[in-house]
Length: 140
Image (cartoon, rainbow, N blue to C red; front, side):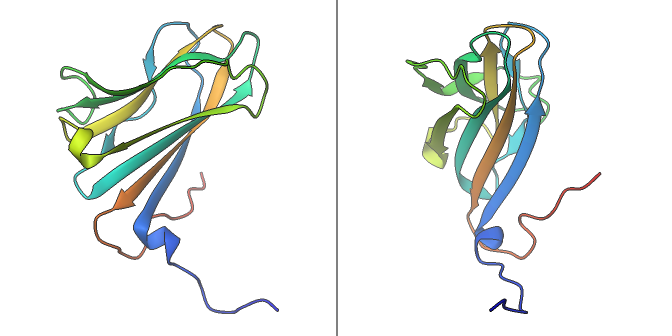
């Protein structure tokens, strides 16, 4: 039986955002800079969505003092990428916690094997304090 009341436990403690990452190149590209001020942990998933090559061959979490990434990047974590995510639906995951960040803002940085390769990138940030509406629908 369906429940009429809205559930809001996970959406109040987790901030989940998704990005269609289409870099049109093979050099390292930042996905999206996120403010970690009110968050203690981040997990980033990069899923192959369109492939011509072997997908992501480098995956890093960076921190930066500037919200647009214009400051000096500091590497927080790097994925070894032992097996290439070379099939649609394959994904890589990295996770970091507050004590590992040297700066307030973080972003995934991906290097693709082929300029036509694309990913869907999911950021999951854990809020330091729960609040309503932390994660909500995004519809254009």
